[in-house]
Image (tube, rainbow, N blue to C red; front, side):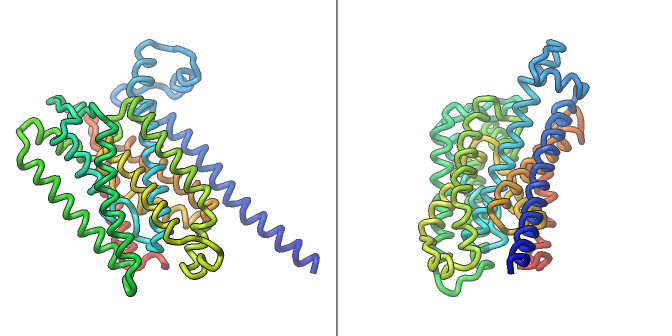
Length: 356
């Protein structure tokens, strides 16, 4: 019996050790990709000089300015936004027990985008410019985020209400999210219809998700919300594991399912709102990254949350780097590439490519 228990313990340690190894490898890969991404652009900077600059050795005044004022904020924004959207997707898929759940497919991103657009266009919290580099500058990020969060919370409450109805399947909840997304997209179009030429050009440009528009100030605010949310989700990881086994099983283990579900969705909505209000809509990151992480580390949220945020950061940073290089010296919005990647993956999941 002792030998059998020892063998089980050994296999368990080996199993978890592999997951930890994958996560550590992902962190190393993310750092390497970050350095490479900083070095690439209209002005190529040697990787060695990038490393020296990051560690405080000033090699060139020009490169120092490019790295610290342009490249590094953009790269870090891609990392933080990718992590936030991916972790929000993990939580939504878990607490709704819906493998197709994500801020984008549930309509939360579009609702937050409408709220941010409404704040910028109607409440005057954004200043519009004609130059492409900064079509919309958020002059009051707090009001913009609060309004975006309010509209995303409205969709969250509706989805939670539908999830509590008997006989409602995961497919129905996705359709509700698609309907909400369509409704708020129409609302954004209505705002665009009544806008003048400059406002119209600005708001259309803003709705294309792009990490390059965030400065150090916006990055600090996004990072603050994302890090707090990740800490909260990590503390709740055992409850998410229990909910994955079924609501009745979770309640039998002492989990207040309704409370966990409500707080998780509100926190995920806040993460979505803060990212969308500054960067625009970036689709499908929250959908495909959690499934990629599950293929590597499984469904245990002790590892799934960390793996998902790493993969989300890798995906969005890779897409942003590719968008920067495709049509130099111009840069595509990163949301264009994530949509091209996410749309076929979404169809693959709907058709049952993943075992649910």
